[in-house]
Image (cartoon, rainbow, N blue to C red; front, side, top):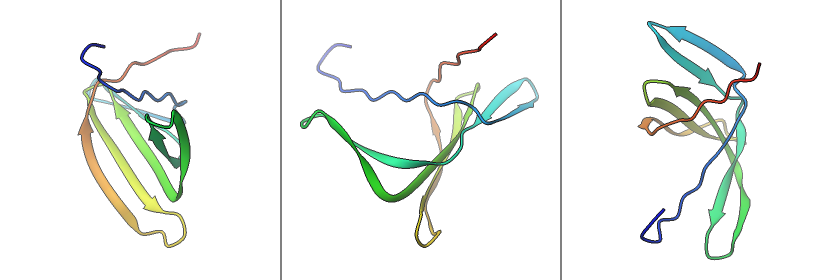
Length: 89
């Protein structure tokens, strides 16, 4: 990674798998959100924020953020990024 680019990478086990028209969709269980801080070199919990995602082999990943206390959806969008898939035998 050149040019001082700061990158955060995540890994999660897929809990629900769907195959549709040759595209694989993997959904993770909701998790508590995180707040990475490069300057402090730490990651802390984002209180009251729950996050989940459906990763797709076509790069169209659906993400949803909701407030744990109220249940209100704070953000729900399709984001495009590459995903690496690891398969266990």
